[in-house]
Image 1: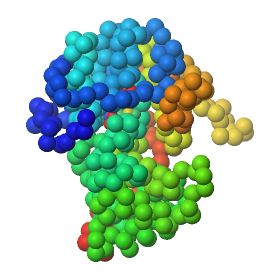
Image 2: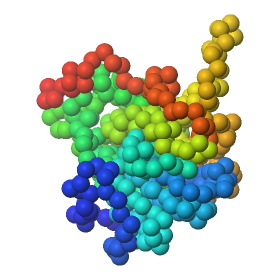
Image 3: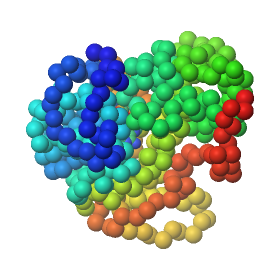
Length: 364
Ligand SMILES: C[S@@+](CC[C@H](N)C(=O)[O-])C[C@H]1O[C@@H](n2cnc3c(N)ncnc32)[C@H](O)[C@@H]1O
């Protein structure tokens, strides 16, 4: 069933972000969106036996949370920054009674949401099928909708960004967060197109981008794929969230607790891989003549040495899983550390200009 914003009324709208918990099962009108959780089988296998208190930092349609509860977790705290995701869960959350707690908030603060040491944390990064498939959320370049892309439904939208950021900033976003080689060309076309008519819909933006790139050959992705990914990452500050979420998970896990992360593109996977390597003291030396690095106390042990991808059965069931990668590590008893995002190769925008200077509201 299609949801409208008008139908969302929850106590947390008025509450401080991340502070509200629910165990409800009510709104009978909310259906379960068909959603196939990605890499759930290998995740549960790598984490077996699943016991104790877990936190699912990307609750989405609740596929991982249900999987963990069915596999033997005593309790799962499901966190999502998208109020609609938690609202959809009301149709079934009651089945699990007080074994399931739902929290509206960001996983960068997951240790605060947990309020206790955890036996496991799962993060399944990016957007859900639910979000992509609803044109009114503005994530899709294939269906027309408002240019929104905000998971939390608050803050600066993609339309705000596209219509006010300077050409240089737009180009940086497309290049650094989408690896779009035609970033400058696309940024110029956006800036030319947005005046006098601001760009407010997904299909108009997709069309502007498509005209800057060669027509895709059969089997190639839509020309707007990389740009839409980049804008979504910028709007939702996904790399800041990711780095802070990994660090928060390290703080929140008990010795022996597990951290499982599923990524969807190489930029994300690189950050998770570097984090695990650093935390496990297994970073390769940059060159073989470099002095041997001091042996730090490992804060994690790697459970998966290589990232796990979908097998043929999963790919046949769910082609969207094709770029997913799972990495799992186990927390040791070593004290948690803060991590410098720069050392994780997390993509970032050039620091030289302040955001204010980069924003040229109304100039074009
Ligand atoms: C790929 S989906 C997760 C699907 C889920 N594993 C399932 O099986 O249903 C990602 C979800 O994480 C949420 N999300 C993304 N980044 C987040 C963040 N930083 N904090 C909290 N939730 C986030 C999104 O709103 C989305 O609902």
